[in-house]
Length: 279
Image (cartoon, rainbow, N blue to C red; front, side, top):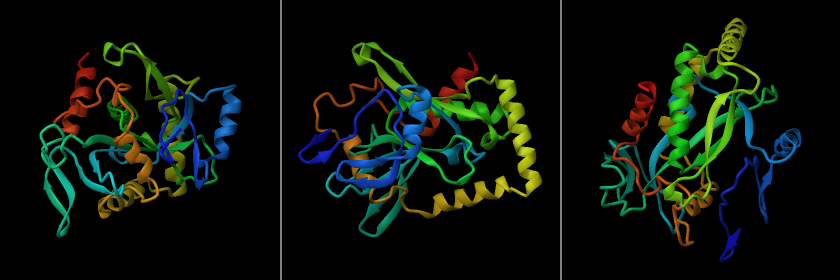
């Protein structure tokens, strides 16, 4: 879809895998997109995945984010407690009150997450991953809870679990009974939880036997994310900004929680996990 010469993000009821190459028509599809859709016999609503890291917070990085609408550059990124903000003296570390009470954000700050996954079990690029970017709080809180659950039941072997991304739909009174979609993380089709855990244990043992150091990989990623002022690449930002600031009327109608971000993103996600665990 285009408006004023700009390509805008489109809400869809299936996954689409793109490469890192753009042409006049937008992002070029990744070869896996056609292959997986052919296997699915139509729309791609599930993706077989593995994770890169054992630490849930490295796989899913969720923040409150504010982008400059003119330049497309990130201006402020926080977690409800502290933030990194571009100021006259460069990037400053400041308290983060959350989007609802932040005067600087003026209502333009949103929960924003990046979720890294390895699709399938290909050995072509073991450390290469796809990134799911989302401003849907339904998706963010669901993925955060699932990552904690799978990490716990697998004994911390999250990177070895055979998992699957599943696109789910639901409707609510706040969405005017229109279907909205969010992404869930489940055990791969055809496997029970116990089987998935056993596979994770066996893969973990094989990796250790080969000298694969998962703890060192997690630590390298942790340091890498900490070193950057902001994570978004310049070429990725325009699409993100269009998602944040759509010009069409009815902004946020597709997500019943849009515009109702909690004061602390971390505490909200933790509370969600606790409520689910307590039944």
